[in-house]
Image (cartoon, rainbow, N blue to C red; front, side):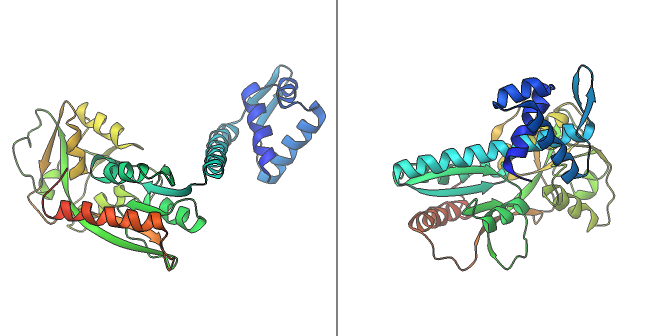
Length: 300
């Protein structure tokens, strides 16, 4: 499969008409039809239903279209960044992160690095597993996540352990208490992210399972903000890292747990054995200060 196949397919999926798609791509209709047929043969799946009035995407075609658009968007973003870097002669430095870390000190690291004229900074919202793959592929230079992953090409450092909190709706019976895990297990649980896994969702489930507690997962959400919205709607409760309480969302109360040792690690991932660039050295120095601030209670 080549890049042009993705572009041809997306044009056909958006126009739902081969003639219009060919015109949009500035090519003749027969070659476009052949390319689409080749793509379906390579995938072993039917992407379109051909009819007298045009094309209709199959369920498989809709799925492939969604992901093809994401791949093309990432490629376009990368190409634009490379061109900017080439024109400016700046060093490109990529940071991967899980969303929950952007409520704490990570924005301070980003802000300080952005002030360096010689650096072109890129950010990518990725799970810890995705960060490891992105590091190995050279798409990012440093990652911040919550899972420990054993990979010979990536080194991980636990910066600190962050307390977990229960997020419950306003007026919930647990408001005003420091609940135990056993008490939390009595209420429906909203879990996030639903995918990709493993993720924080598995860390949360593990906290209950290791204590022999069964939970009822009433709803799964891909985004933390969606999960919190479900909590506000009284679908259930959820567990969140301490940093999340800083957003002060209406309709939610954040409760510290009775078991103070229940935490989520903040894990920094880097490529193993690589000589640190000047930007990496600067990032490490900034991180050292931020982590020390967190450990000594100077939380921003």
